[in-house]
Length: 595
Image (cartoon, rainbow, N blue to C red; front, side, top):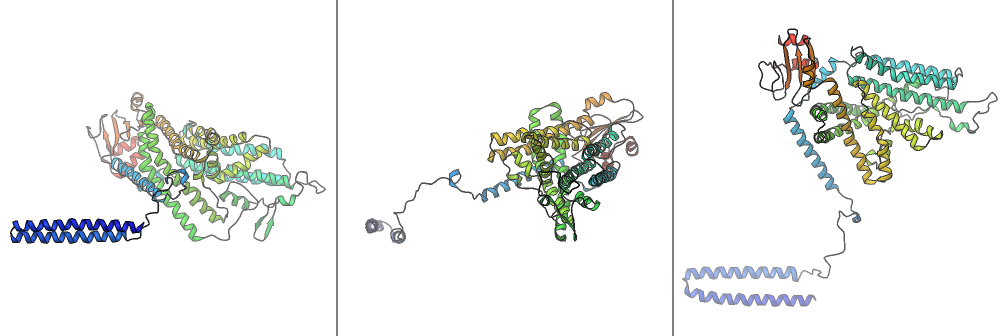
């Protein structure tokens, strides 16, 4: 086969050479008709062209015909495309890099658009003013945190009485029910009554959320403490002759939990000490045990890293809320008020991205930076605060993996006890979600002083969604997508509903506001789409309209309801005056600033 191909190539080369010879003959006749100079140039050009073509034909012949290329090897074989499921191809690093690049580019464009539209809203001075004008140690938040120790001491004394058999378990159950009910209801009553009934201020909602969160955590911890010690008493109960009352537990030694404190080995009831209780209160866990895994030392470098992460990420969250989320929330009130469904959907989608970014950063800040910092300081060795919830194929798996401390508490003190008492798995799961929904609504409605049940309904909606992802979608990739959609779209929808109700309650619309104004000194806040606005009537009967002009970053005072830039009287305030104005618009401030 190779010899035949070589012969064919040789014959082609000979034919091309003969054609070139005929071309040389035509050049000879042409040279007679032209001048000597012209003929010499043409012949030289023809000879160069002939030699150049011959050289490249030779090269082509040597490379192709003499190269030893195997023409018998097939070019096409039966194979599938890489994107086909049957290809088995899993290396998508380039596509992942492209997705990350597109994510940064698209969010960078949104950030640039936000800055061009609203300017730089991040103000550390504003943060300082926010903290100083309503300090966290102001009544009642700091007082409630200090009073939480009362519940701790009462529970400790109750366990001492139960260990000495001065109190029966049935009586203890009734007393514990009253104690924990008061523990949850009293802080809520203080926060609610002082603000609504007495109107004497109950602290900023943010500080109220933090204080109430401490009470919720203490409720879960102390419930676990009382429940666990009940189990230990049950296993340690003996008759006078030394036999165990519970016949089901015939090998009591394997149920002992040992707590080592130095060289001491303590068993129940020797664990009932205040140092042991307060260690559990500060440990990053909600489930009490007689023995916690302990590390040997505190790593200073690890502590410094976690502290740096905690500070930096907290500042990033505050900056994102101030620059990105706050303008979106202000501009989302009107669509939800007028029930413009198209704009409502657009606002939900627009808020979904910053809300989810803040949620992810907050998750890392709390469950990795903060809890690991506390665990290192307490030498607590169990650092499994979360699992790979991002791979969850059902919502049930997500709730089991993203918050391990709460999941362990619910599994240990609600789910399994209900199963052991004859309840079905569905009833036990519904009870867990009900408790979670109650505390979610507790931490939102009480600080905001309004009950709308959006947080409660969102949590209870997880039950049918869990069944849908598990029974209908059968998990897999569709279940994971539904899980992410419920987080990305569900949270901003609930936030917008609360923001809408908050502004409707506290900042009425202009038409409602002007009809309600009388001759007394009145201050009302509303939040239109184009800026901050309030109306004040002085004692002299003069009505002033105040708005925030974003184009000039200035507070403008007018004596007429006009558009920006058209007013009969205006005054641009300094940054300090603007901070004071934004914090508290009052008659005294107006007299000091503008009269």
